[in-house]
Amino acid sequence: MITSEVYFEGIDNTIKQYLMSAKHSIKICVAWINGSKYAPIFYNLSQKGVKIEIMFNNDNTNSNHGLMPSEFYTIYPINTRLSSAIMHNKFCIIDNEIIINGSFNWSQRAHNSFENILIVKNDFELVKSFLHEFNDLVSYYRSFNNNTILKCHCRSNTYTMGILGRENGLYNDSIVDIWRICTKNQHTQFVAEENEQFIQAQLGLLNEDVYDDDTDIYDKSTMLHEFQEEVNQTNNIQNYFAQRNGNKIDAIGSIIMTNHNEHIEWGEEPEYQINIVWKDMYYRKIIPNILYNYEYDNIAQIIDKHCMI
Ligand SMILES: [Zn+2]
Image 1 (cartoon, rainbow, N blue to C red):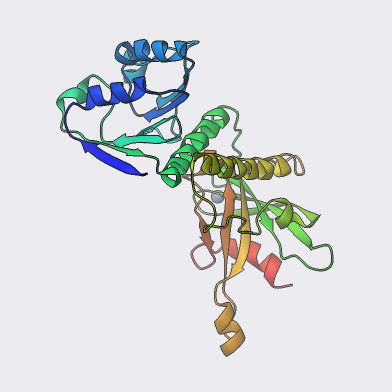
Image 2: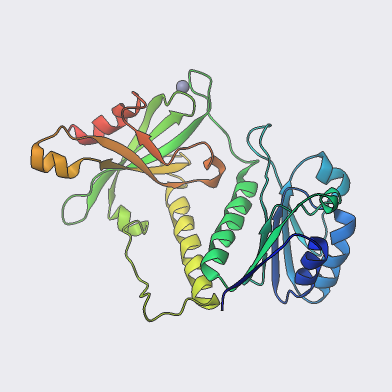
């Protein structure tokens, strides 16, 4: 049964009690965490076999008062890509079944402020969303220091995008072309193209709905299975594109006609946009989900190459 409760007082103790109740795993993602308060708790839990992972903002507060690296838990100090941004999440996943979320920072100072936490149990759809966020931030953390960013002629940073062309014929032949796009002005530079077969199927992008909602109870094991499949799909995409022409692909786009019906029925001029079907977490805040033709002149170059043939 899904239950939820909210706390405005005694937050510190409530969090402590929930942490101590953990049997298998704890994932914490907070801006700030107090080392002297939480390290002993994590030590005790680790002795019971609980796997503990903690993610926090990489800043002076955490360097001075936060958690030191330890064999009893794993830490991920997160750097944001902009100096003005911070990792400001505040959530905790216990045993993949309890979510703690709210305004409360796990620091000394938060104790005296007006704060709240919401605790939700057994909402596995919700747990899965938080697991993805945590997992994505771990990938982001791991790729942070080994990303080489190429500059555009306008001096802004670029990302590399694979565009999936339309599939034709018995073997679903298509062209995947690779473009470098700058983040500031959407300047485009053609890099390479490759011929592919059945690529959308291989990448699991065909949206086959395998779950039957009526018969499956969405319990923890169903959720974990589904979560793992989704993680695997992302990994497959990353691996597939890892060494295309020596280019690491940061995003994959697919060109969509936005006025298909009007085009067929009224003969309207076709209009296109590029839907980003996947992007590397390192670029999650940088690459938009949709590239509009009318917004960025340069994007038309990519669309024209695929659609004006
Ligand atoms: Zn540029």
